[in-house]
Amino acid sequence: MTSLRTGFDRQLAAFLAECCVHAYEQFDHNGSFTVPEGYSLVASFQAEAAATTEWFGFIIRSDDKIVVAFRGTHSSQDWAADLEVSQTNFIFPEARTHTGFTSIYRSCRETILAVLNRLPNSARLYVTGHSLGGALAVLLALDASVNTPFRPTMYNFGGPRVGNPAFTSRYNSLVVNSIRVVNAYDLIPLLPPAVIKSSLTERAWFYRHVHSKHRIRVQTGDIKNNHMIKTYLDAMLQQHGQGAADIPGQGGGESDRLPGPRVSEGEIGGMQGLSGDER
Image (cartoon, rainbow, N blue to C red; front, side, top):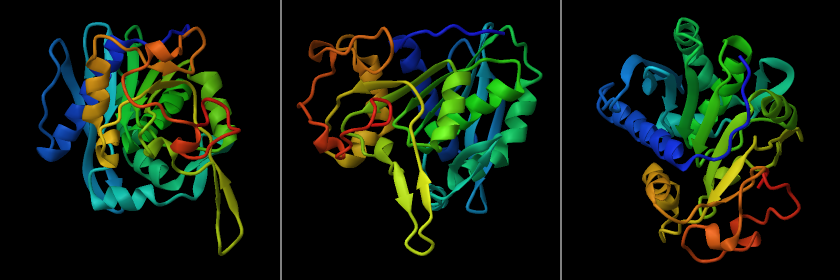
């Protein structure tokens, strides 16, 4: 099943951001959440963070669409996993990914792939997540591209870097439709740093973002709120003010950006000299 590159779709992004909100709702209500209208629940799944089993997301479907949604960091165990910044192998020998993110993903991988492999591949698969869940969505998107008949479309919101340049290269070649929605005032997409060096072993780990960044500009005046899924959902629901995008064929003029103070590259982390997707 082939997949043609498509551009940023604001209506789709708003729906997928809403799915991320429901994934947090699932955690807060011990597995119960609101299934979007027109969809039915296929499966809910749990994953393990720091030896604790937690609700992490769900799979829903309509007549022609399947959605897998992941929530982000929502417990102290999740924070512990976020801090495991060393790398481990993932699918391909040269591809290495964040140990904490990958550990969580592997704990729910078999459940998710088993469900996907029994669903009709005539449906379109969408994978989404916010924050830590955005990293899990990236891992699943590549995994599903290799180990299921689907060619998924991935949208994440405020997602961190996930793997090394070899992982990113594999991902970019296999996951054709991939959108990272990034608030210019959100700090989480700047993490982990592009290079991390161990003070004990002098070993270095390298991180690079996957494609393709769609930048929005929403300054709430609060660092935490700049990252919240509600901030991203509200931005997607705005009727006007398309965000600047680092996507082939997408506009990026100043007049197309969401309202907010102008910010220089230095103000968003001193990342001068990196490519658009790496920032």
